[in-house]
Amino acid sequence: LPSRHEAGVYSVWIEFSQLAVTTKCLNLGQGFPDYDPPSRFSDYLAQVATEKNSFFNQYTRGFGHARLVKALADLYSKLIDRKIDPMNEIMVTVGAYEALYCAIQGNIEVGDEAIIIEPFYDCYEPMVRTAGGIPRFIPLRNTKPNASTSHSSDWKLDPDELASLFNSKTKLIIINTPHNPLGKIFDYDELTMIANLAKKHNVLVISDEVYEWLVYKPTQHIRIATLPEMWQRTITIGSAGKTFSMTGWKLGWAYGPSYLMKNLCVVHQTAIYTCATTVQEAAARGFEHEIALLGTPNSYFQTLSDELQPKMNYLFKILQDGGFKPIMPEGGYFMIADWTNFG
Ligand code: PMP
Image (cartoon, rainbow, N blue to C red):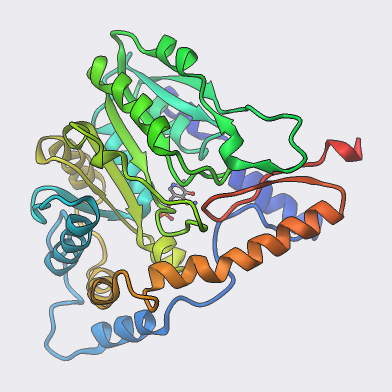
């Protein structure tokens, strides 16, 4: 194995999945639903794959199937209140995972530093290292360690500590909101603090927002790309798998200004060239359906978190009753619980 790939050898997912099998315990560590996606998605996929004389069983446009990038541009133009160019400002990827890979690989030069906030989704670190970059870590700290109930919003960055990590080698900072695994959603002031540092030091922001629709009332998700002068230095990443509860579709995307997206496109066309056409066409039809429902109570973007919120409260109570100290999330799939009570 070439030494630049050493950082990718160990995988927490392989270790945990194997442990779950050998010890016959329930694996709650990996983020995927145990319920079906909205049935129209499977219907669309079946239709798309069986339509006669269609081109959907053949290759499509490399940087994203036209109907899908148009749907995504339509959706995000509304959400970030800015006209997004579907052909130059969005790229479709094999899950958000590939979008992260392209964003990191397409921007890190050997020796560049990348700021990663702990705890973090595990792939950020090997992705930075295999690109020749140097990760610089900063933890979210519990600002209310004595609170009777712990809340994900108690976990914060120390602004001075964060500022001290920026230097002339800093190329990018990766943020993840809603956060895996803390469930934290960065608020406006926190994002402004990060944005100001990024602007001051001319640093790129990669914003992993795969859980953008898993947001529990009353918290609201804010996209850092919408902050003043942040569009031009932000690459935002999303996932159809997380959005529509169909993680096996492995469909994701990145959006940002065209001059930044170009770098991602180069990595994508070298590694992947084009994603599955059937999946993209079916997802596009699904998105079009959702765009029409945006802001209504029937929107899946809304009903999904409405359905998960009582389940989250239930899990929180079970863990508490069992002697854990869980942290109440504001978003995402995960709940962290402190088990030190058990010695
Ligand atoms: N980012 C985060 C924070 C995630 O939790 C995940 C999946 N668990 C991904 C990215 C990757 O998403 P996808 O399945 O779309 O590749």
